[in-house]
Image (cartoon, rainbow, N blue to C red; front, top):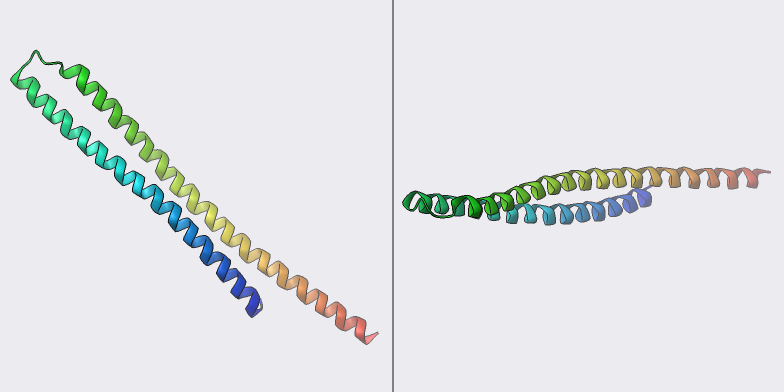
Length: 123
């Protein structure tokens, strides 16, 4: 490929890589947030258990079920986010490969046009 074509492809791929990184970091930030909520949930369950040991008549089951459900929802969201990260990376890698293929195709087209123009001059 020619220098300009390589430069254009590199610029597109750099931009695409930045987009990928931004999206990935956004997902990772949400994952970290969910992990913090999960840790808080575990702590709340521990506190509820402690209170239940001190006072067996306390409503441990009802309150702990709410927390467990919340933790399960956060864990499910983390799984979704990890899948989104994988899809994001695969999608951007495919786009970068397409950029390279498009640049090679453009270069081949220009070369064919140049050869055709030179052949026309000789006639």
